[in-house]
Length: 470
View 1 (cartoon, helix red, strand yellow):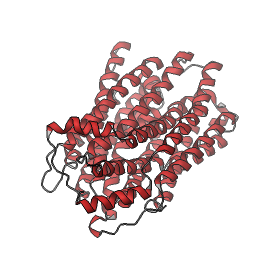
View 2: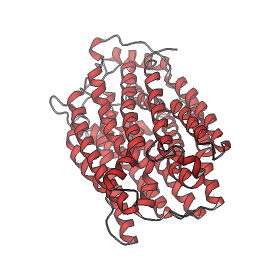
View 3: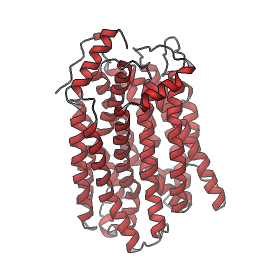
View 4: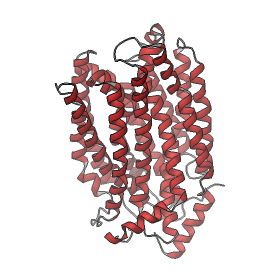
């Protein structure tokens, strides 16, 4: 059943505002995507610490980081609205500069011993995770108060994902090129210098984008100010919401599918794929791995754009279910592609990315539905806490998927910049194919159980209006 189109003109979000909101995700993904696509590779082959050290660092810091998101959500929900700004937009101004500073130093490679490098990586990466939460959780919650209409929120979420995919395209196609250009080559010391310069420039760009996003967006809904004593009640409402838990599990397994393949891709092309076939993709700076990321990101962006046209009229649950099941089936094929057939590997990734591209937009729009659903059930507005689940699930999936890449490679005997054993190569093949397929299918199963269909949300929106609630 399709969703009703917006009937209240005061709740329509103009194109310029949607564009402004998308700049926030563009800024975030200038750093989210480098860690997803090249994070493991950066820490092992550029920064210079072992794969197992990287794996355990990512596992511990990312799991601990997931605790931060609900805390930030609770604090954001209790922030006193500023006149002309609202409750969530001020965070874009407050943390734009700290975000830029921390993101820059996270990609600096100091001349330290092995233990010193590990400590520096732990501290700076943890700092990145904290400041990312402080700006991204309120940014996500902002979408829930930009309009009370589900269709408008869904459309805005797709704009958000376009911003994210554009940033991803820049990272996939240009990061290693810019690193080599600014660093002066592809030697380890040159890559260290290149990463720091490039990511510092990206940090400045991200800061400007966050500030512009704050300037162009608007909060149309102003929930009642929360009291400190409401925290336990808010947590109880969230914990007792089955739809919230189901969507958390869906999000977790979706992100895990992406991070498993993305985390191993750079290793896969460097150590498993046929070297001569890889070199034949020299049209792309960085060869086949750059083509893999670049064309995959373009396909994901096209997927988001195509499905944007259906954002207001199609049942999001059905859309996600079909997309993620199809993605899982496509993922299996990676295992059977000969390592000489780079063109087929890249084409398969393009299809996978086209199908999975819209899924993040669907999930974030669904979180705004949960915020409305809980409100309709009699709870106070908890947009920040509810939306923190999106970041929470992302980071948890990222923690497990990303850390497993390094841990499995390390346990299999991976040594950076050396020929790899057959066992290590088979682990790479598994993480490119069967592992993402399994997580996609599990995500589809939990989505099948999700209760908030388009028809149900039309009724929730109507009931909220009748009660005079935002």
